[in-house]
Image (tube, rainbow, N blue to C red):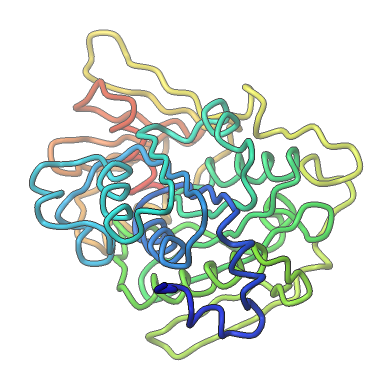
Length: 339
């Protein structure tokens, strides 16, 4: 009998016992872009029992440079990413059950998907969804692996409920985001580095090798030859509403969720963050100008064009996306260009 996992079993920390555990586990991957497809393919080849994929977007030509499960045919036909990924994963390993959801990762949707999940992988492009994942992780005691990349830079961190600081803790102390692939670009080696860190941590969790988990936040720049590992345990906060002593899971609550509305008769979608805060319009404008976007700005708002769409951002964080009544499309543009 051919054993497709023989080389993985020869790796002592996994062995035959670990391989058996891997083949009994369920992984949820939120996002089917560059990180999502890289993680999904590696775990399908590793032989996990089930992969659940969720993504709201479809395949575009600009994805093919780094999103490894997709083909020109997928881009030409604008196949939803989750569907295209499921088909390709079945071709790679038909023993792995792949459940694909073409949907936005809202708290309501994601909470329905976490039942029976052993670990979650962050492959999304925005902190709204990551903070929802973070609260679900704490509420249902599910570890998750944070990951992000932009340009030649990547970052990853393993979050274990009741043991490590959660994402909410880190956001108050560690700069984690701001730029996006659509404003500063991305090269595939940065993606592959983040995927390598995420998949390795997932395999450790699936075989139960908890002592081998990396407890530091790791970041790197593959172009500048920089690699940093930071001990972030000191940032865990007992008063944190997500992971502290009095958990309320704030990002699962309606008042803290991003709100959207189609403006009547205007072919426009309004996007309003859960928490209003004064936005750095000046720095956003400068960043967009550097990338060749034509900016119109006054002390109260900033606007710019992306193809046939006009995005207008106000100081309180609200954004109008002119040129569409499609909420999913508007949110995709919002996260791609504003972050």
